[in-house]
Amino acid sequence: MQYCIGDVHGCAKTLEILILQIIRKDKNPEFYFVGDLIDRGPDSKSVIDLLIELNQKNYKVEVVRGNHEEMFLNAYTRRVPIIATNWYKNGAEQTISSFTAKYNLNKTVKDYIPEPYFNFIYELPYYIELEDYFIVHAGFNFKLLKPFEDFEYMLWTRTEQNKYEFTNGKKIIHGHTPISKEQIEYIASNNSSDVFNIDSGCVYVNRNGLGYLTALNLDTMELKHVKNIDMLA
Image 1: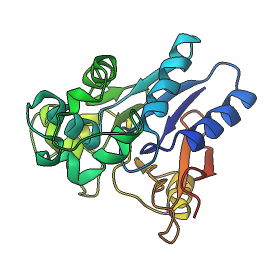
Image 2: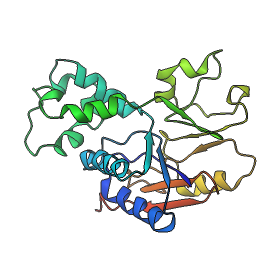
Image 3: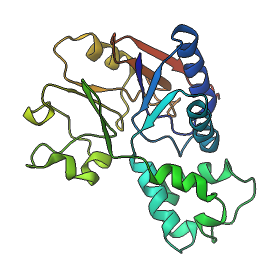
């Protein structure tokens, strides 16, 4: 079966629990992620390592690029101090500290993040098209004649998504904007819904209704939520 997982944001232990729960129930799952694997949470490195390990064990794993991956890529390719990048303001320190205990913000991102991790993130597509779904981080700009070419919109929009003729009857799965798991459950139970936000704000443990990592079974529309264990107070 196919499973789509919301914004992980460096919460590796929580993700591992969710993956194990799925594997115990389904011997041959396929995993899709809406992006924002990294930043804010404590162990972005282990999140990527886990996905690489799953792939090496012959599980299908596909990830779309999120705005946090984009900020990382931009910072990595610039020869400027970490503190001078936009990424620094959006969770860079947590990600860098998952690679090394000691770092200097006046050095560059390349000084601390090994190239294979850059390559992994660089290769992430902006969206994935499946038989019945499009998976994207934030959404599509259907005001354009070519909505699948507006990559910035796919990463950053917070405009409520509606399905249009461009999708050819396929539903849209996205993350980026945290909503409560109760809202996610309501939308998933609505048979008329064409757009599904599955970002239950895993990293935001102190915000009411958030602090969960969500997986949506794309074949049955069943939801699975795991409470964040990486950032216990």
